[in-house]
Image (cartoon, rainbow, N blue to C red; front, side, top):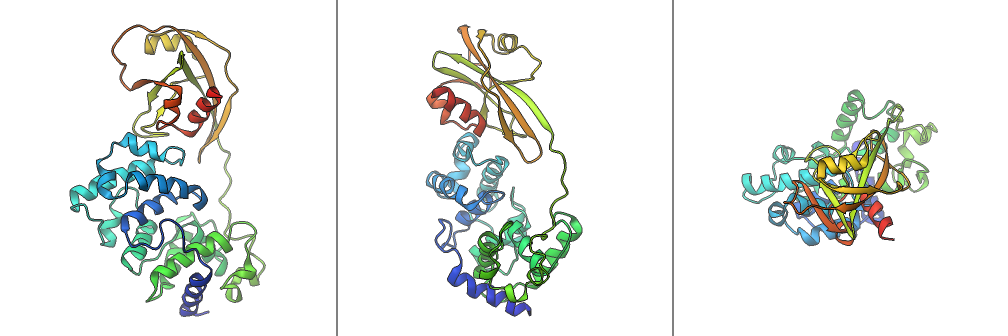
Length: 347
Protein backbone atom coordinates (compact mmCIF):
# COMPACT_ATOMS: atom_id res chain seq x y z
CA UNK A 1 0.00 0.00 0.00
CA UNK A 2 1.32 3.44 -0.91
CA UNK A 3 1.56 6.30 1.58
CA UNK A 4 -1.33 8.08 -0.13
CA UNK A 5 -3.53 4.98 0.13
CA UNK A 6 -2.75 4.55 3.83
CA UNK A 7 -3.78 8.12 4.68
CA UNK A 8 -6.71 8.37 2.25
CA UNK A 9 -8.31 5.14 3.50
CA UNK A 10 -7.85 6.23 7.09
CA UNK A 11 -9.32 9.69 6.45
CA UNK A 12 -12.31 8.27 4.56
CA UNK A 13 -12.95 5.76 7.37
CA UNK A 14 -12.70 8.42 10.07
CA UNK A 15 -15.24 10.68 8.40
CA UNK A 16 -17.86 7.91 8.48
CA UNK A 17 -16.93 5.63 11.38
CA UNK A 18 -14.69 7.73 13.61
CA UNK A 19 -15.60 9.59 16.80
CA UNK A 20 -17.11 13.02 16.19
CA UNK A 21 -19.01 14.02 19.33
CA UNK A 22 -16.48 13.92 22.15
CA UNK A 23 -16.62 17.11 24.30
CA UNK A 24 -13.25 18.38 23.02
CA UNK A 25 -14.00 17.82 19.33
CA UNK A 26 -15.51 20.21 16.80
CA UNK A 27 -13.36 23.07 18.06
CA UNK A 28 -10.09 24.66 17.06
CA UNK A 29 -9.56 26.21 20.48
CA UNK A 30 -5.98 25.17 21.36
CA UNK A 31 -6.72 25.47 25.09
CA UNK A 32 -9.63 23.01 24.99
CA UNK A 33 -7.62 20.63 22.79
CA UNK A 34 -4.57 20.93 25.05
CA UNK A 35 -6.53 20.12 28.23
CA UNK A 36 -8.10 17.06 26.58
CA UNK A 37 -4.77 15.78 25.27
CA UNK A 38 -3.17 16.04 28.72
CA UNK A 39 -6.13 14.29 30.37
CA UNK A 40 -6.04 11.51 27.77
CA UNK A 41 -2.41 10.68 28.56
CA UNK A 42 -2.54 7.22 30.16
CA UNK A 43 -6.30 7.55 30.77
CA UNK A 44 -9.25 6.08 28.84
CA UNK A 45 -11.71 8.39 27.04
CA UNK A 46 -14.66 7.13 29.08
CA UNK A 47 -12.88 8.06 32.32
CA UNK A 48 -11.85 11.49 31.04
CA UNK A 49 -15.20 12.87 29.81
CA UNK A 50 -16.70 13.68 33.22
CA UNK A 51 -13.49 15.21 34.53
CA UNK A 52 -13.04 17.25 31.35
CA UNK A 53 -16.50 18.81 31.58
CA UNK A 54 -16.02 19.65 35.27
CA UNK A 55 -12.53 21.07 34.68
CA UNK A 56 -13.55 23.21 31.71
CA UNK A 57 -16.61 24.46 33.59
CA UNK A 58 -14.33 25.88 36.29
CA UNK A 59 -11.36 26.83 34.08
CA UNK A 60 -12.86 27.77 30.69
CA UNK A 61 -9.74 29.52 29.39
CA UNK A 62 -6.02 29.93 29.94
CA UNK A 63 -6.39 33.01 32.14
CA UNK A 64 -8.80 31.33 34.59
CA UNK A 65 -6.46 28.35 34.90
CA UNK A 66 -3.37 30.51 35.36
CA UNK A 67 -5.04 32.68 38.01
CA UNK A 68 -6.29 29.74 40.08
CA UNK A 69 -4.35 28.29 42.99
CA UNK A 70 -2.59 24.98 42.48
CA UNK A 71 -4.76 23.52 45.24
CA UNK A 72 -7.94 24.38 43.36
CA UNK A 73 -6.54 22.91 40.13
CA UNK A 74 -5.63 19.71 41.96
CA UNK A 75 -9.07 19.59 43.56
CA UNK A 76 -10.72 19.56 40.11
CA UNK A 77 -8.22 16.91 38.98
CA UNK A 78 -8.66 14.76 42.08
CA UNK A 79 -9.44 11.15 41.16
CA UNK A 80 -8.02 11.34 37.63
CA UNK A 81 -4.53 10.35 38.80
CA UNK A 82 -1.03 11.19 37.52
CA UNK A 83 -1.25 14.55 39.30
CA UNK A 84 1.95 15.90 37.76
CA UNK A 85 -0.21 16.44 34.66
CA UNK A 86 -2.38 18.95 36.55
CA UNK A 87 0.64 20.73 38.00
CA UNK A 88 2.19 20.94 34.53
CA UNK A 89 -1.04 22.33 33.07
CA UNK A 90 -1.15 25.00 35.75
CA UNK A 91 2.53 25.92 35.30
CA UNK A 92 2.18 26.02 31.51
CA UNK A 93 -0.91 28.25 31.71
CA UNK A 94 1.02 30.71 33.84
CA UNK A 95 3.92 30.60 31.38
CA UNK A 96 1.54 31.32 28.48
CA UNK A 97 0.18 34.35 30.33
CA UNK A 98 3.66 35.63 31.20
CA UNK A 99 5.60 34.78 28.05
CA UNK A 100 3.01 34.65 25.25
CA UNK A 101 0.57 37.41 26.27
CA UNK A 102 -2.07 34.82 27.13
CA UNK A 103 -2.14 33.38 23.61
CA UNK A 104 -1.40 29.69 23.09
CA UNK A 105 1.75 29.55 20.91
CA UNK A 106 1.36 28.25 17.37
CA UNK A 107 5.03 27.51 16.73
CA UNK A 108 5.56 23.75 17.03
CA UNK A 109 8.89 24.10 18.84
CA UNK A 110 7.47 26.65 21.27
CA UNK A 111 4.54 24.39 22.11
CA UNK A 112 7.02 21.71 23.20
CA UNK A 113 8.70 24.09 25.65
CA UNK A 114 5.52 24.19 27.79
CA UNK A 115 5.48 22.01 30.91
CA UNK A 116 4.10 18.54 30.31
CA UNK A 117 3.92 18.77 26.51
CA UNK A 118 6.06 16.33 24.58
CA UNK A 119 6.47 15.86 20.86
CA UNK A 120 3.34 13.75 20.29
CA UNK A 121 1.03 15.94 22.40
CA UNK A 122 2.39 19.06 20.69
CA UNK A 123 1.70 17.44 17.32
CA UNK A 124 -1.91 16.66 18.26
CA UNK A 125 -2.51 20.26 19.36
CA UNK A 126 -0.81 21.64 16.23
CA UNK A 127 -2.85 19.33 13.99
CA UNK A 128 -6.26 19.95 15.52
CA UNK A 129 -5.93 23.62 16.45
CA UNK A 130 -3.66 25.00 13.75
CA UNK A 131 -3.98 22.43 10.91
CA UNK A 132 -0.23 21.85 10.87
CA UNK A 133 1.18 18.70 9.31
CA UNK A 134 2.65 17.22 12.48
CA UNK A 135 2.43 13.55 13.31
CA UNK A 136 1.50 11.95 16.61
CA UNK A 137 2.91 8.78 18.15
CA UNK A 138 0.94 7.80 21.22
CA UNK A 139 0.31 4.23 22.40
CA UNK A 140 -2.60 3.70 20.02
CA UNK A 141 -0.61 4.86 16.99
CA UNK A 142 2.38 2.72 17.96
CA UNK A 143 0.09 -0.31 18.03
CA UNK A 144 -1.44 0.46 14.63
CA UNK A 145 1.94 0.95 12.96
CA UNK A 146 3.62 -2.01 14.69
CA UNK A 147 0.88 -4.31 13.43
CA UNK A 148 0.41 -2.85 9.97
CA UNK A 149 4.12 -2.92 9.20
CA UNK A 150 5.15 -5.85 11.48
CA UNK A 151 7.61 -3.91 13.62
CA UNK A 152 8.87 -6.28 16.28
CA UNK A 153 10.44 -5.27 19.57
CA UNK A 154 9.08 -3.32 22.52
CA UNK A 155 7.95 0.10 21.28
CA UNK A 156 9.35 1.81 24.38
CA UNK A 157 12.97 1.19 23.42
CA UNK A 158 14.78 4.13 21.77
CA UNK A 159 15.65 2.08 18.67
CA UNK A 160 12.07 0.95 17.97
CA UNK A 161 10.61 4.34 18.90
CA UNK A 162 12.98 6.08 16.48
CA UNK A 163 11.91 3.65 13.77
CA UNK A 164 8.23 4.33 14.50
CA UNK A 165 8.71 8.11 14.45
CA UNK A 166 10.37 7.92 11.04
CA UNK A 167 7.55 5.73 9.73
CA UNK A 168 4.84 7.97 11.21
CA UNK A 169 6.39 11.05 9.62
CA UNK A 170 6.60 9.34 6.23
CA UNK A 171 2.85 8.66 6.30
CA UNK A 172 1.71 12.25 6.97
CA UNK A 173 -0.71 13.43 4.25
CA UNK A 174 -0.49 16.86 2.67
CA UNK A 175 -4.14 17.67 3.40
CA UNK A 176 -6.87 16.93 5.97
CA UNK A 177 -4.36 16.53 8.78
CA UNK A 178 -7.03 16.83 11.46
CA UNK A 179 -9.10 13.94 10.10
CA UNK A 180 -5.96 11.86 9.60
CA UNK A 181 -4.72 12.44 13.15
CA UNK A 182 -8.15 11.74 14.61
CA UNK A 183 -8.41 8.66 12.42
CA UNK A 184 -5.17 7.25 13.81
CA UNK A 185 -6.42 7.82 17.36
CA UNK A 186 -9.86 6.37 16.65
CA UNK A 187 -8.52 3.32 14.83
CA UNK A 188 -6.23 2.42 17.70
CA UNK A 189 -8.85 3.12 20.37
CA UNK A 190 -11.86 1.39 18.79
CA UNK A 191 -10.67 -1.11 16.14
CA UNK A 192 -6.97 -1.96 16.50
CA UNK A 193 -7.30 -2.50 20.24
CA UNK A 194 -4.75 -4.19 22.46
CA UNK A 195 -6.89 -7.32 22.86
CA UNK A 196 -9.57 -8.67 20.55
CA UNK A 197 -8.97 -6.23 17.67
CA UNK A 198 -11.87 -5.93 15.21
CA UNK A 199 -9.75 -6.63 12.14
CA UNK A 200 -12.79 -7.32 9.94
CA UNK A 201 -13.85 -3.65 10.39
CA UNK A 202 -10.41 -2.13 9.79
CA UNK A 203 -10.02 0.09 6.71
CA UNK A 204 -6.38 -1.08 6.45
CA UNK A 205 -7.03 -4.81 6.73
CA UNK A 206 -6.12 -5.58 3.11
CA UNK A 207 -2.57 -4.30 3.65
CA UNK A 208 -2.02 -5.17 7.32
CA UNK A 209 1.04 -7.40 7.46
CA UNK A 210 0.32 -8.66 10.99
CA UNK A 211 -3.12 -9.85 9.88
CA UNK A 212 -1.64 -11.53 6.80
CA UNK A 213 1.05 -13.27 8.87
CA UNK A 214 -1.29 -14.09 11.79
CA UNK A 215 0.79 -11.99 14.17
CA UNK A 216 -1.92 -9.65 15.46
CA UNK A 217 -1.83 -11.12 18.98
CA UNK A 218 1.95 -10.92 19.13
CA UNK A 219 2.23 -7.27 18.16
CA UNK A 220 3.13 -4.83 19.44
CA UNK A 221 5.75 -6.70 21.44
CA UNK A 222 4.95 -6.61 25.14
CA UNK A 223 7.10 -4.67 27.55
CA UNK A 224 9.54 -6.97 29.36
CA UNK A 225 7.96 -7.89 32.68
CA UNK A 226 9.53 -6.73 35.92
CA UNK A 227 8.47 -7.60 39.43
CA UNK A 228 6.47 -4.68 40.82
CA UNK A 229 7.76 -3.75 44.30
CA UNK A 230 5.30 -3.89 47.20
CA UNK A 231 5.46 -1.01 49.69
CA UNK A 232 3.54 -0.43 52.90
CA UNK A 233 2.43 2.61 54.87
CA UNK A 234 0.15 3.48 57.76
CA UNK A 235 -2.22 6.43 57.32
CA UNK A 236 -3.35 8.16 60.50
CA UNK A 237 -7.08 8.77 60.60
CA UNK A 238 -6.96 11.41 63.35
CA UNK A 239 -10.55 12.21 64.36
CA UNK A 240 -11.89 14.88 66.69
CA UNK A 241 -15.62 14.35 66.64
CA UNK A 242 -16.63 14.73 63.01
CA UNK A 243 -13.40 16.51 62.05
CA UNK A 244 -10.40 14.83 60.46
CA UNK A 245 -6.83 16.10 60.29
CA UNK A 246 -5.33 16.40 56.80
CA UNK A 247 -1.71 17.12 55.96
CA UNK A 248 -0.48 18.64 52.68
CA UNK A 249 1.99 16.49 50.80
CA UNK A 250 5.24 17.92 49.37
CA UNK A 251 4.80 19.75 46.05
CA UNK A 252 6.52 17.04 44.00
CA UNK A 253 6.49 13.26 44.07
CA UNK A 254 3.57 10.90 44.58
CA UNK A 255 0.32 12.86 45.10
CA UNK A 256 2.37 16.08 45.11
CA UNK A 257 0.47 19.07 46.50
CA UNK A 258 -2.61 17.08 47.51
CA UNK A 259 -4.14 16.89 50.97
CA UNK A 260 -3.77 13.47 52.53
CA UNK A 261 -3.87 11.60 55.80
CA UNK A 262 -0.60 11.82 57.73
CA UNK A 263 1.63 8.83 57.01
CA UNK A 264 3.99 6.86 59.19
CA UNK A 265 5.97 3.70 58.64
CA UNK A 266 4.49 0.40 59.75
CA UNK A 267 7.06 0.28 62.57
CA UNK A 268 6.13 3.62 64.16
CA UNK A 269 3.66 3.83 67.04
CA UNK A 270 0.77 5.94 65.77
CA UNK A 271 -0.14 7.60 69.10
CA UNK A 272 3.44 8.71 69.72
CA UNK A 273 3.71 10.20 66.23
CA UNK A 274 0.42 12.08 66.76
CA UNK A 275 1.67 13.51 70.03
CA UNK A 276 5.15 14.37 68.74
CA UNK A 277 4.21 15.79 65.33
CA UNK A 278 0.85 17.38 66.05
CA UNK A 279 0.81 17.88 69.82
CA UNK A 280 -2.36 15.82 70.25
CA UNK A 281 -3.38 13.34 72.92
CA UNK A 282 -5.11 10.42 71.20
CA UNK A 283 -6.47 6.96 71.80
CA UNK A 284 -5.76 4.33 69.19
CA UNK A 285 -8.65 2.24 67.90
CA UNK A 286 -8.57 -0.99 65.93
CA UNK A 287 -6.96 -0.49 62.50
CA UNK A 288 -9.33 -0.56 59.54
CA UNK A 289 -8.95 -3.12 56.79
CA UNK A 290 -5.89 -2.42 54.67
CA UNK A 291 -6.33 -1.39 51.05
CA UNK A 292 -4.14 -1.85 47.97
CA UNK A 293 -3.36 0.99 45.57
CA UNK A 294 -1.42 0.30 42.38
CA UNK A 295 0.90 2.88 40.87
CA UNK A 296 2.81 2.52 37.61
CA UNK A 297 6.00 1.35 39.29
CA UNK A 298 4.91 -0.13 42.62
CA UNK A 299 2.01 -1.36 44.73
CA UNK A 300 1.16 0.34 48.00
CA UNK A 301 -0.58 -1.35 50.92
CA UNK A 302 -2.30 1.27 53.09
CA UNK A 303 -3.29 0.50 56.68
CA UNK A 304 -5.75 3.15 57.97
CA UNK A 305 -5.19 3.66 61.71
CA UNK A 306 -8.02 5.55 63.47
CA UNK A 307 -6.96 7.78 66.39
CA UNK A 308 -9.57 9.51 68.56
CA UNK A 309 -8.43 12.86 69.93
CA UNK A 310 -8.73 13.16 73.73
CA UNK A 311 -6.94 16.50 74.05
CA UNK A 312 -6.56 19.09 71.30
CA UNK A 313 -4.67 22.07 72.73
CA UNK A 314 -5.65 25.56 71.66
CA UNK A 315 -2.77 26.56 69.43
CA UNK A 316 -1.98 28.21 66.14
CA UNK A 317 -2.64 26.12 63.08
CA UNK A 318 0.24 23.82 62.35
CA UNK A 319 1.87 24.46 58.96
CA UNK A 320 0.59 22.33 56.09
CA UNK A 321 -2.26 20.86 58.13
CA UNK A 322 -5.98 21.50 58.27
CA UNK A 323 -8.95 20.21 60.26
CA UNK A 324 -12.06 19.62 58.14
CA UNK A 325 -15.48 18.13 58.63
CA UNK A 326 -15.41 14.68 57.05
CA UNK A 327 -18.00 15.73 54.44
CA UNK A 328 -15.85 18.74 53.47
CA UNK A 329 -12.67 16.68 53.46
CA UNK A 330 -14.18 14.24 50.95
CA UNK A 331 -14.56 17.12 48.48
CA UNK A 332 -10.99 18.40 48.93
CA UNK A 333 -8.04 17.71 46.65
CA UNK A 334 -7.34 14.18 47.89
CA UNK A 335 -5.70 11.07 46.45
CA UNK A 336 -8.32 8.49 45.46
CA UNK A 337 -7.49 5.94 48.21
CA UNK A 338 -7.72 8.64 50.90
CA UNK A 339 -11.12 9.74 49.61
CA UNK A 340 -12.26 6.12 49.64
CA UNK A 341 -11.13 5.72 53.26
CA UNK A 342 -13.17 8.78 54.26
CA UNK A 343 -16.19 7.65 52.25
CA UNK A 344 -16.11 4.27 53.99
CA UNK A 345 -15.78 6.04 57.34
CA UNK A 346 -18.79 8.22 56.57
CA UNK A 347 -20.85 5.16 55.64
